[in-house]
Amino acid sequence: MRAHASVLHLDLDAFFAAVEQRDKPSLRGKPVVVGGVGGRGVVSTASYEARVYGVRSAMSTREARSRCPHAAFLSGRFHAYRDASHAVMSLLRSVSPLVEPLSLDEAFVDLERADLPDLEVPTVTAFAEELRGRVTEATRGLTASVGVGTSKFIAKVASDLDKPDGLVVVPPGTEQELLRPMHVSVIPGVGPATVERLRRAGIHTVAELESVDLDELVRLVGKAHGSGLFHLARALDDRPVVAEREAKSVSVEGTYDTDLTDRRLMEALLTRQAGEVAGRLRKHGLSGRTVTIKVRLHDFTTLSRSTTLASPTDSSATVARLARTLLADLDTSGGVRLLGVGVSGLADWVQEDLFGEAEAEEELPAIEIPHHSRRTWAPGMDVVHTDHGRGWVWGSGRGVVTVRFETAESPAGPVRSFAEDDPALSAWVPPPLPGEDPEDPEDPEEPLVEPPTPE
DNA sequence: TCTGGGGTCCTAGGACCC
DNA sequence: TCTGGGGTCCTAGGACCC
Image 1 (tube, helix red, strand yellow):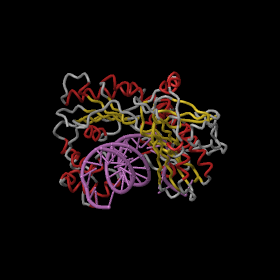
Image 2 (cartoon, protein in one colour; image 1 turned 120 degrees about the vertical axis):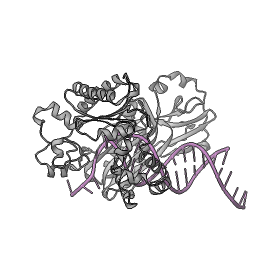
Image 3 (tube, protein in one colour; image 1 turned 180 degrees about the horizontal axis):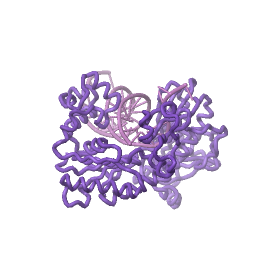
Image 4 (tube, chains in turn brown, red, blue; image 1 turned 60 degrees about the vertical axis):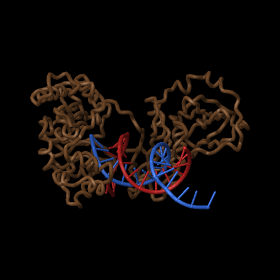
């Protein structure tokens, strides 16, 4: 909670649909729905013309079609959205170094770090109005709704008050009178489940929430959430605008038009997804220790299974093998509508660490691995202990097993390879599965079974 | 043929360590 | 062969956000 209205929240109006209307004049003034167009798709964004018919984000596309059959249904062009988003974020960063993007179409801007003569309401209002114009210019016609207030919470609430193409500045000191009549769902983090819990306790508005003491709120919704609600209900929010946030996980998932029942097909799909995840890790110079699969059954029951490695990986083959191993424990006989693979526990990891230091491989002293000292560390992975430290199986193929050693400096130390039949190496190496090319573990062949295209 | 995809954060229980 | 508490890591699930 600041003394001045110096947090700005900007939200591009009906972003995906607006980009489509900008790029295709025949769509202007007409209902446009962007989202999944398959049998199980949902709406990402509806243009304001489509919202008139009750089409909303997250609604199934099937329902959107029945409400507005004459709308244009588009599956989306993410490169175009990314480009437009980039133009906006660059503009915002030119105005203040402290910009926190929330998604492609939303960001906070810290005006304390902008070049303004002062932070009084008239000054900030004029600045925000000019900024909206510059956003429209930079995106060749997209409009933005902007809110400005003394905190992130207030700025975000404000940007919602005059959509689309509006600006609301909440003067310092007026926050509580603004919030009190509002429904509790204006508070970020209050979704359907919390609304229902609060409703049962007779709490509907922010004013009512404000009258509940901290202990009672914690009892109702838990420790962290309760404390958050207690403060936000009083407009107390000092969360800073944070420019750089590091990714914590990378994942790929897909929902299929018809439920999957063939385990071999599921394995093939997981293998493909693992390759996408690992590829994205490598692209960003990341690796991760925990591999998680997600399985949604025919009845929408959602399961997850995860396993954690001794050291991070970005290998397609390793992620794929672990994913398939995790699937093996699950009963999928009723059919599966969604499969996904993710990697978390991310670490910065530069390619040179692994491949650029061949000399490190040469420097390693001879190693004897006593049979009895080995133990299984994780499904599909073996770990070996030696006098020189601990190593783990990194990859295998062509009769060679590659072991990566942990050192005092780094859990991802030098790499050394062994012949598969080396008596020193007692680690069990899982055989390659169909669809995985043992010649090149980073480039698995297409699965033998051709999977259906995920929507 | 209700219910996406890519994320973040929290909780709770168990293992393990000191 | 009794009893503990705190801290951390891991796993599974759930709520929430855009």
